[in-house]
Length: 167
Length: 179
Image (cartoon, rainbow over all chains, first blue to last red; front, top):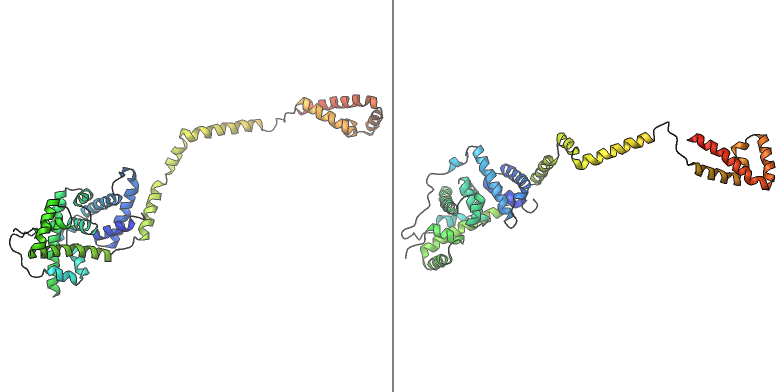
């Protein structure tokens, strides 16, 4: 718990977006880890195993809350396709991020679906491979890839919207 | 040349492309301005997410740790029924029963009314030895008349051994009463 507590708690916080839920999630996750200690396979990543437990608990909690957060997903979240020449204008996200609008980024992240947020956290913050993410999330690598693509496309769109609002 | 799709750029950033695909994207991004801009935008997004996470990193709350240990300890504590059941396990029950039987036997042997056992031979030897050392201390010579008689007898060294033997025999009768 000393070694993995902080990482687990931060992972839970990024998933839930608030500290009380992150505390509950982390607490329950470690209790499950203790109970299921014998089922852990040596040689595999212990942190990945904890993240998988957190992920499952989070999913269960969302179901219990009847997908309360799922309704925030915008309809138009399909990944962008670039068939022709792209505009050379400076991408709005560049200037937006340069301003370090962390609050807007958090807001945009919270607007993603739990699965999209989760795959972004695992891929870009925790730097797990698609294979590891598929094991943690319990889905195929193809699903990981498509979720990540959609999540990033949507995040960029939301950030651009935030930038226009702030101008 | 066809531009690299954003999806492929994302895969490229995450290092999941096959070596030949990775090399092809790398070559294209270095020459195509549009794709390079898109690549940078995606890369900036990844770096920003990482930087944001690092800036917001929280310490592990001690209350969580305390609650986890509390829950674990509560789960480990056996109920009254479990504790009673545990006492019936052979590993505990057999030694416990043996200890009770031994205690019961010891209680019978030490119960009031049973006198301590003294060996007759031991009594005779000890009594005779005392008489040799201090013949006047013998209980049989408690009265004055007997003391005088004993003193007269003690004066006769030839009869001393006989006196000790008779006193020892008298003591043997006392010892028998102790049984």
